[in-house]
Image (cartoon, rainbow, N blue to C red; front, side, top):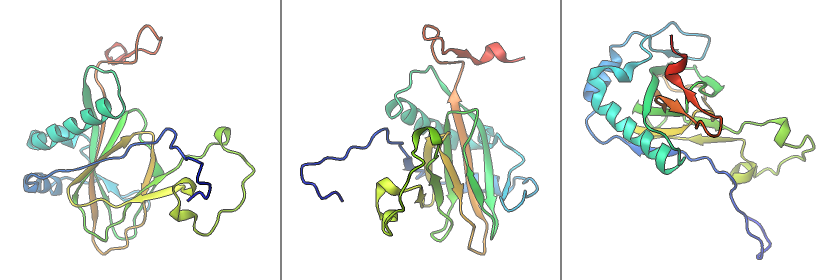
Length: 217
């Protein structure tokens, strides 16, 4: 902590991580997920389901309704977006077998990213968020960090978040995130869900308007 009693420290432009828990029965969804075909593995990054619109399946309606209420809560009450309606884009199962991982990445061509941990065990790999470093907003002159820098919020370049069983988390799709290697002897399972606005994004008067249907063939 700072030593000057007269000084104050403010968070500028914090990024919100939305965490909630699905408290209803998940057995029907879990059975449906476990019956899905998976793609072939790519390197050590794990595998995803061949169905990448899985939340659109009628059997998932209760879960989809829950996800959408959460996305709308985040978009309206945290991001304060002006929009008519949200819709799901892609949704997919993601598996990490023992030793597999997922490098830091973001989700392009969408607005919000969500992850549902329907089969999470206490010793499963956490979700790792990475601070995106760009030369335009960071000095090339940097001293070394103190040994305790990982305990201080302003020196973090990676933050690990450990969810609980049936947690659903939401964050902006541009946030860099990944999964460290799976050090257990079982499959780490999760469901990824993306969402974006439906119809129109932006505003005509500010010359920021995108009408999605205008570009569809």
